[in-house]
Image 1: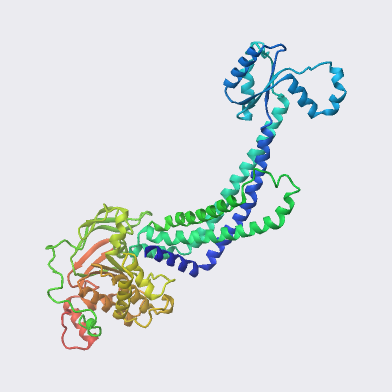
Image 2: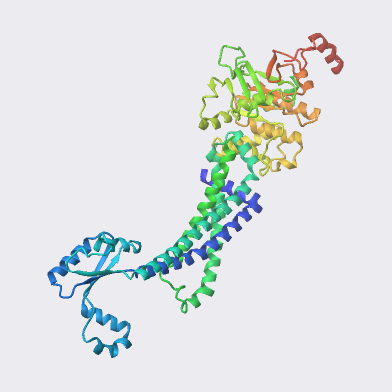
Length: 301
Length: 280
């Protein structure tokens, strides 16, 4: 009975104030559209950045003629070091095979020149966080008083992290991530502010009505529910329209192109179904809470 | 004068001695009690200054005085739309200052209010406007369907149930507002300049309606500067001037300086009758 009453009140409110309701709906629609386009873009960008960052590794070269026992000891020590995600062993032979694979031309006739395998046995460390590479290097080979790195264990010859590469990758991807995150936050704030403001205006036009309701003895929630339901309806309709348009755009433009462009097919972008759910929930939540919050001012009679 | 009010409308049974609430003041808790009440607005202007008064059950009281004297302040304080700056207001023994916010809606449901500008909901039909104050108290739908047409018939608007407020005349809108205020039979009815926007003819009709409500046992407080009306009704008059109560008479006139004899002479002249019957 109560829910039915509130629902009827909400529909009456929408019908009698169709112009502001339409304005709110359009605002929700537009912001949802923009967000719907932007979210996958942000995701693809950060996904790519993360992939690049994950290439950051630390190589620990072992001395020639290291004994298996020493090797085990080093491996154990590395695995126990903080911030280390995984440790992989690459033997001399493996190393050469990989190098050949990477650059077959150089090794085609180079094998003779080398006269043997110059590569050391190597432990390749993947850090849990690319930003912590330095910390790992410092732990495995701390600097001594003169600034020279000294390996912490007997079997270790040298610790390398391709310093300049790492630095570049980290700073570039970090910047990309910060920029996209900043943009996303800005856009979300702008959307909320825009939707809330439109709703504010539509409720402001009805503040006298709210005042009278209060004077007749309506409780706050008795007045609020119809407005909140109105907000949910407007949000749902705006969101639904936006999702519809996004689907059409995806089907007609993105999907045919996806085969050709890697970014569009990036595995890290949000699942379209999930995107729809997120957008719908966000639209309804923002416009409903917008309605409820705006009312607060007028309920203080 | 008062008798006229009941002549045309038989719906409300005239209260008998048994149903009429006792009018003995002090015997029961007064419906309204102002104890040294002061209201200073945020800007510093004084709305009410050290006002003390008691209004008993079933009384009909006029608050009179020029604009800005504190009449509306009194009405709004009683609804707890404003908070008193000092002093204590009690309604049926409940102190308003210590009443929590969540209790305010219940207080307002027990006070019918009629405003000068009607304050009807513009988006609702007459029927829905009156029904709203029943929906607010959670009245079942069949009860609403029964009561609303009844009360609208009582105020003489049974043909306009489905019109919107802006399709009605001022007097008709005020009738709707009275119907809304009275539909759940509150023990207290406040009217803030109920006839302020109406012509004298219409005003009389409105005042009669309010008087009939009073006769059912409802305590009525009317803020007005309609001197003709006050003089005709001859009920208790509380006069305010610059926020102070300057006069409280049991059956007073709008102007205090007019003696009963003077009033009688004027009344005789106005009505063209031989002797003045004391109203009620």
